[in-house]
Length: 116
Image (cartoon, rainbow, N blue to C red):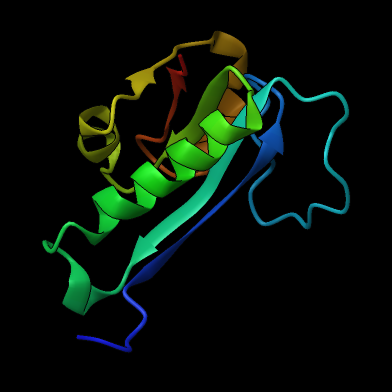
């Protein structure tokens, strides 16, 4: 529906393989950074299935490309991994991320996309 908020995406510069701690205030951004981190993407229930999620992901990826940083990372949570795979992200396994990923919930997975 026109004039209704369909969703949002929040991303910011960040360091590879260092996802922010869950439920912590980010007071500053790291310097230097080597990529962009998609912190959150949410779509209103009424807008699911309309392509709004894909549009938001595409906008975040374009903003990352415009920043000239080489990659985008995120935590896939809540069974969202297939969605992110369709957007071109791939899972990255690092044993040292296990404890932090566990705080995001069962099945959380670190994913990234290299930008060209």
